[in-house]
Amino acid sequence: MKAKQNNQKVIMWYKVRELFERGFNKSQISRELGMDRGTVIKYLGMSEDEFFGWINKPCCMPVKLQSYHDYVKSLLEAHPYLSSSQVEDRLKENYQDLPQVHSKTVHNFVQRVRSAEGIKKRRDQSPRVYQKLPETDYGHQAQADFGKYRMQTKGGGFKDVHFFVMVLCRSRFKFVYFQDKPFTSKDTVLAHEECFKHFKGQPAEVVYDQDRVLIVDENLGDILLTGEFRAYCNQSGFKPVFCRKSDPESKGKVENVVGFVKKNFLRGRAYEGIDSLNASALGWLERTGNGKEHAGIKKIPRQEWLVEQPLLKPLKQAPPGVPEKKRYRVRKDNTVSYRGNFYTLPLGTYTGADTWVLLDEAGGELRLYATAGELLTTHPAGTSRGATIRNSDHLRDKSESLPALIESVDKILPPGERTAVFLDNLRADKPRYFRDNLLVIKERGAGIGAEYLSPAIDMCIEGGIYNSYRLIEIAGNIKKSQERGAAGEVDVPRLKMQDKREIMGITVKTSQINTYQTIME
Image 1: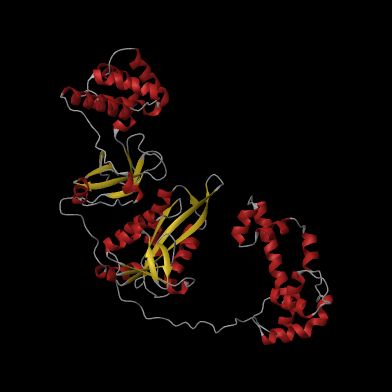
Image 2: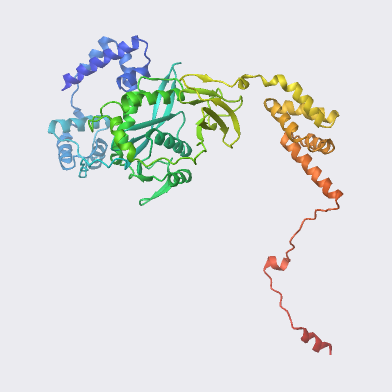
């Protein structure tokens, strides 16, 4: 046994040295060989002679604990599930003269007693009995889960990617969706939408783990879902089913898919961006994930999906003639990836990692909207793949028209030094949004009048307010106030006076009026 272990150590030592000489660092060697990083460091710190001297060093039974062999043997025979730490505590409890030894020495001693006496460690309860369940009906159930993997980048660094997977239980047809941040409820809803589009339908129920992304609390089987996910389930019509805590066997199919994605797709792949990763994942699913024979059912998932797809619940469609708007993430370069192509957006659309737009396609034309519904741009739908489809206006330097815009604004604002001070401070305070502020004045200030804009400018300068929306709002209020005053209207605030006695809860006693009349007579 010891000779076999030594042979394995020798093989691993040479592999560690070989990878190190090829330029791998310690962490990369650890991942490549599946070894602990500390063991890699230890092997690299030894010369060949030192290594062979170390593995050939005789290892004897700890002499200090040999007299306790019979006690430990009887203890393990009666309770084979005890750990080395528990055995150490029992020794200290029953033997006051127990020598001072390291816990690792006790662990080695217990393992040698087990080996010498043939006592295997067993659980203190009856093992769970498993049986292979019958296959579910086509279209009835899917299983979903989340995963995380650390990928190496081309620059030599590392990037954590998070992914959502779902598998149809009968056909084993799979889907995976990646993103570069942990999933929220909103992200999970989006992943479901992409998944059901890939399935071309949705199952009657989906089995999940009790993940905090989806549920708020659980009380004896009563699951309280997050608001956003609950609303999505009600709208879509499928039933969410949550397995018991610490019970991965209940969704073993998707657990296997998570491992399959990590080991078959992600391992050895360099990170080049989340859009590229999702595009590569679709190709992998086509070739391998759904294109090769499944080891469990001995069938190809894609062929089984052709049987299952007609039995899935149809996706809810937009009303006739109204194209459905779908959410797409905006990339840092102000583009959207759609069906293998990149479509440009106006500069400044991207405002952070959580920037989204809505997209619909009809009549060979793509329309991109802000999430509030404002149309941002249109593009002809691309027919090839890998192309960047640009709108020439998105590349135009709009700062060239800035002098003309300022000239238009000067005609709207009242002339004078105060106006110049306001515009100069506006440019200094918001240099990136100076043009946008001028456009607001041009579009909304023309109908107000310079006589109302002048006092509004004074109020903005005195209050340090440099925002065109606020300027227009103040000028509009001044205009309304003066117009009401000219019409003789006075705004008198209506106050509800409340008697102090009512506030204090005091009830005043009253007398009949005839009582006072009798006294006066």
